[in-house]
Length: 403
Length: 237
Image 1 (cartoon, helix red, strand yellow):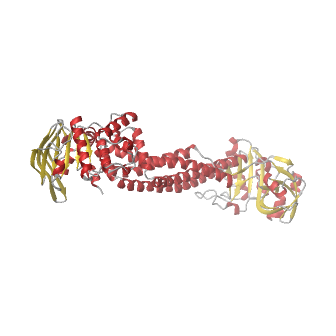
Image 2 (cartoon, helix red, strand yellow):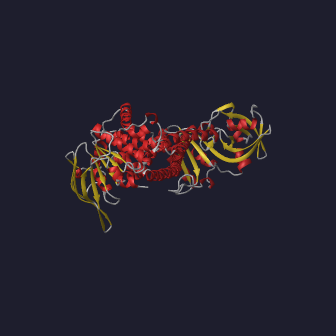
Image 3 (spheres, helix red, strand yellow):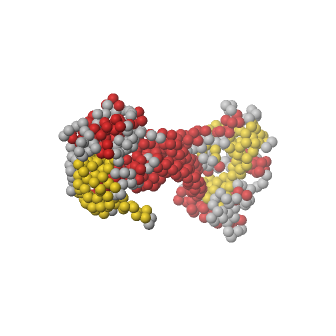
């Protein structure tokens, strides 16, 4: 039988029951759209995490209080609660030659009110002037604070690009006042936009001298972390060892009561979390594809029973078992291909809508598209094969007699 | 052209054995018009299925143009059915979603001569004309035409691949006498003009009288093989 005739016959019988065909296509379409949008969500998150971590400066080491327990990963450690990092720790490692810049970080969330009356809840971060070097922050307007202001507990603030707009609308924020937990701060600078990325928006925070942060807002002498910029990528491991041994000496402990992460460690951990997350989501979406496949099998079985007589007739007229087999499998593959095609388009549209309205980066990778095509064509083959085999095995005499 | 030697067909259902056809030997010449007659349950349908290569005998030999059918596999049988045999059924068996033309074309889809669409259409029209089917109705669906017309479409379909034999199983069973007569005359015409052998299966004496030779079957056995005297016919060879 010619391929063209085969396709015509398959399309003809699919057209003969449009509603049933359409519903089967719908099943596959939803499955594929789910898979494509879930994978693109995962890929998008991965890309945005990468971007945001890279934008936070390269060759960085971050020292956190507390220890990550082996096998428990980076997130579940609860290390932010431990209080071991203080100003002494900075002094203890400052003279390591390979360290280019070093800044403590104290973070809290507070309600902030501007003198034009706008009100926002945002992250207040206490750092030194080197913070801007380590974290790769570029000033857009005004200036950053200096060592003198840090020492004298000056109540000055540098605003992230987004929060500056939120608090002051279009007014120039420089030299205006903001109020954090009842304390007035003078705005001295606004950062250049970094763009929102992944889970954190790096334009939505306010930087103040850590001295003021500790005295007025956090109320203790501990840091959430210490960020260190190493002068060269090659020295990262050396600095990590040097920092570890010096801090252990300072803390008088045999096992470190702190953790040192490099940018790559954090990136690798986050990527692996997102990969697991994506895999899980795709798996759930994949289940709907399987359900769609079962729907096709159900529909094909029904249609084979309904067409028993027709199949008998075709055999009497000279159709070989393989002609019948190929026609039924082709019907199933046509359904999945159609469903897959529309599903991919729908999946891309969903991804675009997610990134536009939920503000989450999505990325439709070729990989996601290829996986969907491969999976749905296999679904068509696998779930079409059994009904097709049954149809092909029909005895023409029995089939013609069938009422 | 057709030679049956001691054909026996036994159906087994569990422990029971039913002998449907018992030891039938038969010879049919090229261009012959024969009728196989018998009451229901006589085994004439089984015999037709064997003759139509839809089924293999349990024992005995079936030669169709010197090919031993019992040695062929399923695919080779399908090929024989496609090229050599045209079926006409009592219930017409036209595909309701296809129009008249598409129904006639159907057997050529399974032929491996790969005619173009145009050639197929021409051939189908030729076949429809041979059955005197009114060509105004070729784009109608089977449910839009009469029973007599449907049976002519079925005959045209049987002609599509230029068969050696037309096997007609009670072709007039669903038709009134007058329409039935027309269908039988069409078969006679094809038999005499195109020299196609016709094997007619029927239980009616009157219908059988349109053939040249009647073979009577009873309880699976051939009981009579006689020439028809006073044949009912419009066309003469």
